[in-house]
Structures are given as C-alpha cells and as structure tokens.
Image (cartoon, rainbow, N blue to C red; front, top):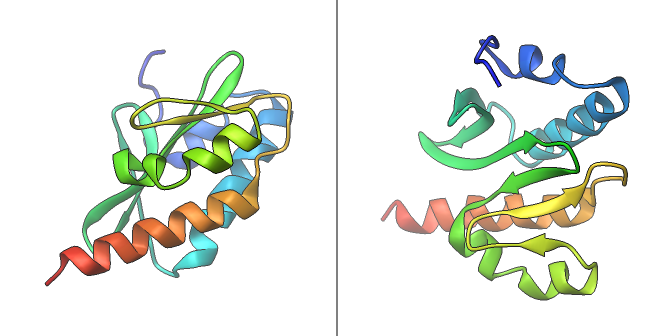
Length: 122
C-alpha cells in the first residue's frame, strides 16, 4: 500500500465503511484509557505513544485487523486469544475483519501496556 496517508484519519479513510467503523471504535477504546495519547504513523500503521514510548499499533488487512501491543502485551493475553480463537504471534494478534473487535480485551491490553511503560520509567 502506497503511503498516501499523513495521519490516522487518512489511514482509516482507505478502508470500506464497515472497517472504518471498527477502526474508529478501536481508536476510541485506545484513547479511553488515557487522555492525550500521541497519535502517529509508524511502520505504515496507525500508532499511539504514551509518555513518549510506543503503546500500541493497528493495521487493516484483507481478512483481519492486526493489533500490535508488543511482545509482553501478547504474552500476557495468550489465554484470552486462545479462548476466542484469535491467531496471534510474538508481537501481534489478528481480529477477523468481519467481526466486532473485542474492545473489552483491547482495553485490558492497553491498560497492561500503560502499566508496563509506567514501571519502566524508574
């Protein structure tokens, strides 16, 4: 995909309306944890920073939405992913593009990442 987007709004507009709605819900869920998260584009994906550190990323694909909370963010929630039959790897989980994103789980993962960042700031 050509990098024709400058921000998350532009990125969301590249997708069909049903996927746009999922992205908007995901973005709201991420922001609901902490006000004033910094938004940026990194690795051609929408990304969020907390206290200057990368928090989470997401991206749309043909059959899934990738959510990238880093290695610990994945490791800590593997059981949740297995219970819900989500594919996941060392750094990402895949939410099927035609299903609602599990915002309850996203909220838990984002809260975990915030705590992780806080604890590293010793």
